[in-house]
Amino acid sequence: MATEGIEAVFLETHNWGKAATFFQGLGYELDFATDHHSGQLRNAVGPSLFIAEVPEGQELREPRLVLKVPDGDAFRAAAGVEVVEPFTETHFGTREMTVRDPDGRLWSLQAPLGGA
Image (cartoon, rainbow, N blue to C red):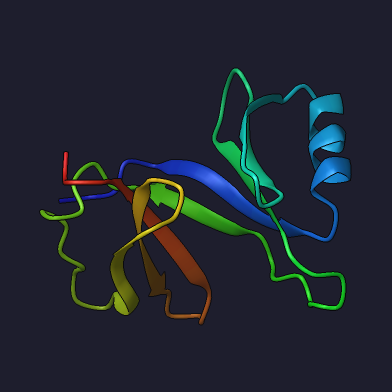
């Protein structure tokens, strides 16, 4: 089973409110916000943005692309794909896997809970 393109871009921020306002100023609409300073914004086209606030002193990680997987149970990483973390359930209702490409970049693969 293959991935189905870019589902989202995952970003970290030191200020969820300011980041959400910034992207809303660029035409994104708030899809949902959590009670722990994170949330998702959507645009009419393209992937959604998932933004998570981290403590002020914590270094922000680079943005990470999230690839869509329709069925996590059926997905098998092909030869040459290093699995860093297998599919695990997230606190926001999906399952996520982390893989590393040949140049050392991390990619997230996201699947719905319970397969397809």
